[in-house]
Length: 464
Image 1 (tube, one colour):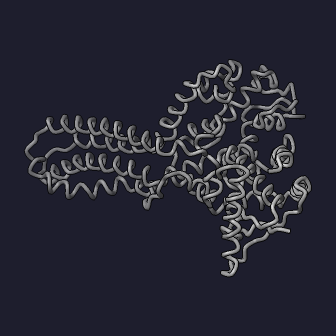
Image 2 (cartoon, one colour):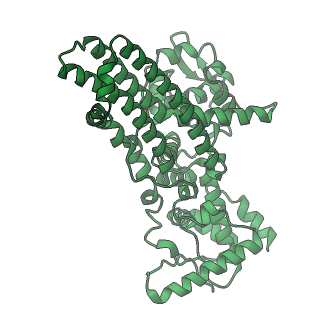
Image 3 (tube, helix red, strand yellow):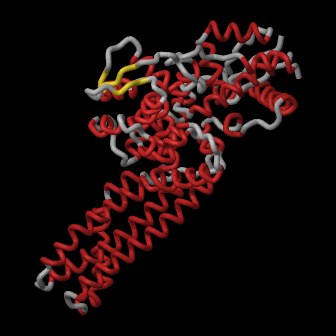
């Protein structure tokens, strides 16, 4: 291995300092990738081109590496400079998908794997073994759409009431009021307590199943903030707050913000805020927040998290939990509906039962909504927080402190401004309809928009 050449390739940057829509940001945004995965994909791309430059025989990229390659080809000056550094003009050879080429490309892939292991060790599975990196999550796709199930929950419950009424009819007519109503309410409470235990255990088990995945392991603190809150402005709160604490932004008497230090720092989110405010008069926070949310760097974070949530949300394991919750709640409600039906049939007073059923239906819907977001707003953040705190780092980065302690780390002068600024993004409820536009478009269709034309064997690059 030519270590000197590899060190030069490793040090080569595809981004210019302070670019708001540079190579890595654009790559992450267009494919809905996390920041860490994007950087790892770029690293693997560098390794691939290094192998192509230092070997005379054809090598072939993975789907993920090919996406990076296509993106880099668009940045013609950067691509030319990188090839010059490697000492070889590396040409992209797309596959024509001819049967006669299959063996050639298959051999190239096997050769690439051998060369990679000799020079760099084991290939990261999420980048080299999957067309879609989220396929590396050990989750099966559900054949049911959770959003449709929940929308039709009341319809299913009412339909269930008729067979339940037939089965329990003899029992329902024997129990008099108020004993039935008291017993029914207690049964409903017990059902909720059982579901709370079941859901908590099930979601913890689900997270333990996927937590070892490198993509989840390497989520940044701000990505986790959005994962929990699902409000992009909450992420921006933390970024602006740190600029205030570091005396780069000043809060004026009229609750406007003034940039007093326009020097860029290492944090690209902070630099984005500085770039927005540079050269402008003091501005209101609502305007600043709205402008920042439209910037690619923040938009990328949002889309990447939606995509991960979508994969978990639409998994068979997650759907199974929601179905159990709906079945238990549906059965409990159907008992009340059955009592209501038998009461009307027998000419009995049902007014008190009606008054009880209306709030119970509302409680059931509320609880289902809570369960649907519990995994994202409670289970995963709580486990991650515990792991971070157990590390006991004495000098943690401000982003992690913000994730751990939230508004407690906000500057006193900044808190009133946040409280006065109205929400500018969607609420915290997470539905599959929200992620279908982000998740599916950010899935294989988005991720392989430029790679799919080459298929799984975007030939690669030949030898001399």
